Amino acid sequence: MPLRLDYVSPLPPVRSGIADYSLDLLPHLARLCDLRVVRLPGQEVASEVAERWAPVAAEEAGAGGRVPLYQMGNNKHHLEVWHLAMERAGIVTLHDLGLHHLLVERTLAAAEDFAAYAEELARDHGWIGEMVGRARRWGELGQAPLFELPAHRTLLRRQRGVLVHSAWAAARLAEEDPELAVRVIPMAVPLPGAVPADAAAAWRQEKGLPADTLLLGCFGFQTPIKRTDRVIEALARPELAAAHLVVAGEVAPEMELEERARAAGVAERVHCLGYLPWEEFSRGIAACDLCVNLRYPTAGETSASLLRILALGRPVLVSDTAQFTDLPAEVAVRVPVGESEVESLATRVGALAGERERLAAMSEAARRWIAERHDPATAARAVVNACTELASLDPPGDDAPPEVAAPTSLTWSELPGVLEVAGGEAPWPPGEGRRLRLRLANRGRALWLASGSGAGGLMVDSHWRADWAAEPVDRRWVEVPSDVAPGAAVEIDVPVRRPLEGATILVIEPHVREVSGFNALGGPTWSLELR
Image 1 (tube, rainbow, N blue to C red):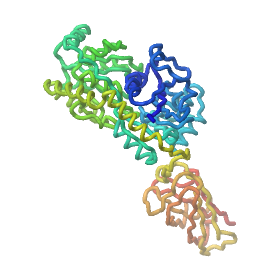
Image 2: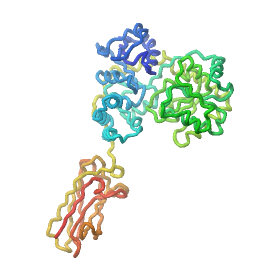
Image 3: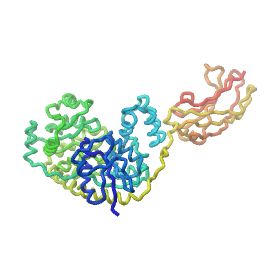
Image 4: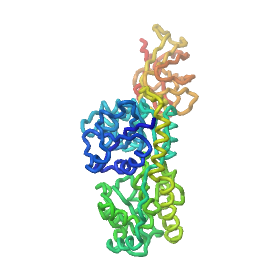
């Protein structure tokens, strides 16, 4: 019996790269399996798409033993895909490794449901997710969690298998959750006809761009993670003194690219063109010598726009991180992230400016690599082969939060607990020595480190005072012999002798080495006042 797939994805006219990807892939899948397309609730489907594929209602997905194949992205267009995939086990193509932005759309964007946001993060990421959810509630949250906490564990553990488009993504998933069945498939990218050289040259002329200077291009919606501002900084360096940059696509207001270009003294070489229709978009790509596709931080997505640039025969400039490590050096120039980013960008692109033959060879290699690696027919075969193998598997299931190592007393600022002391009862005559028995119980979420751990390790301080304002006397430090896990306790003996005169208050307090005493960290202390 042939594989029976229910294809679940946004479809045109939805403005989504995954909708375009689906349109490229569907005809080839249909030749290899019993394929049915599913209509997502609340989403329009273009008449020509509906006529060809006759989409069925979402309620029918997976009925009669069919296998849902979900196309999962990280934006609002995939909310209904997520809901279906949570209800009905299938196979997920994970276009974005991280789905945290989608979680924000589900819980915060409309309803501001902070409780649901924190609950889902805790389910996917344990105590770390819980803390991030709590911080978000009070506005104490930057952008890092959106990229560092992928928020996909529960979804993926309910599937029979997961498809990704890069070996890097597969390795990350295997490290996070070895129980997932993950397969790498190529992304389907049709190879368009080459744009004639005279059409590319005409485009430069139309835009008032020099015919023979090095031209860089940033294409698509420009946001801070695209690093376009770093490209503008690099243009101000001597290695790129003659280079020009075109920015084709909408620009997020906070980018202020034209203002940055004026501040850097390169405004006459930065050309912000706004949104372009696809025909002009492709001519613009062909008119460039090198296209920029930097991304940091990244949600781990395989960029369809990057692959379409390569398909048009232009090499790319990429960040040397994450999924970009899969790109061969013959088609991509990698730029390290961090402090050396601008300098490296200028140096590496500047070197290419004088190597026109190398740029031409990279252009040829780019189209060849797309044709060999990302041909839609080849991609469809890989999808069907992977789905045939995965369809018979059972999902890992189990929505329990992952086991996440506890924070430690070196880094955590809240150390609640209970301190019980036996043997300190009055009367206690001056000069009498005793051995007190301490029981120190950890009621927080951080691991209390033993004294021998150095910084962050616990030491118990015992001292006497004449009154609460007086300086401590007869101070003694006792080591905590072992780590104390959350929910556990440790018992230690503390030898104490009451001073012969003056001091009547005994204080016992744990301290965190090179950090603070428990009194400042919400932890327990113990005291005894003698008359």
